[in-house]
Length: 239
Image (cartoon, rainbow, N blue to C red; front, side, top):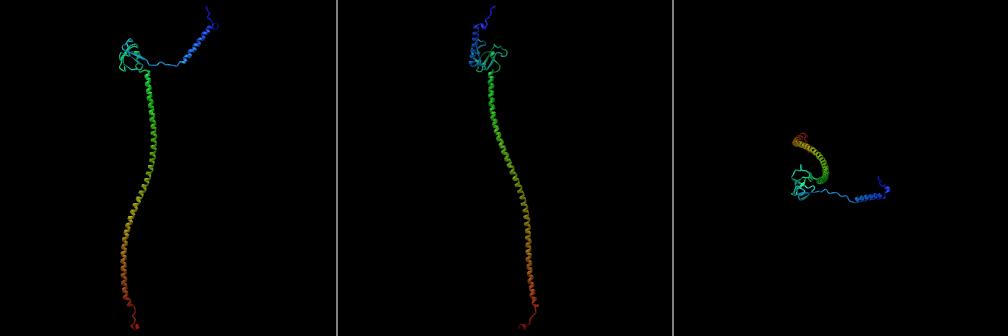
């Protein structure tokens, strides 16, 4: 049996091992130096003039394009079977069933989700703006409510003042009516007193007239009586 040379006994093996290691390092360094790239997800599918791969290509459809099946059964057709379709631009042709799906592709769904997300973000921003506006309106309404409450309190105080003034006015009015009634009663009493005074004055004048007449009569009587009572002197005594 032939023995293989051991590494310690074979310099050529060591050189080969070292060369492999250097090559591996170079490959690793080369991979690290290359930037990462990705395969694009857009796939172009030929639209043919007939239901075989030998028919000429009418157009190249990319993934996500919408077509309408006008001939053939999508549910029962095999992957390699051809279906006749019409594009959104109105071009009619044949395409393999394996390239058709019944739902939008992931790119379209992602675009739709992104559009919905953008719409939701716009709606959220609008709602935020509306919320800020409502908050501002609420603050304004709260300030207006506070002002109305202050006005209400002022009106209540003014109403109490008016009520108090009205009560005082009613009291004064009642007092005025009472004084008017008393004044009317006093006026009637005064009129009665005046009538009585006039009557007394007339009676007094009548009494004074009678007294004067009595005095005159008495004087006349005395004038007649006194000479008679006075003793007559003799004429000789006068001479």
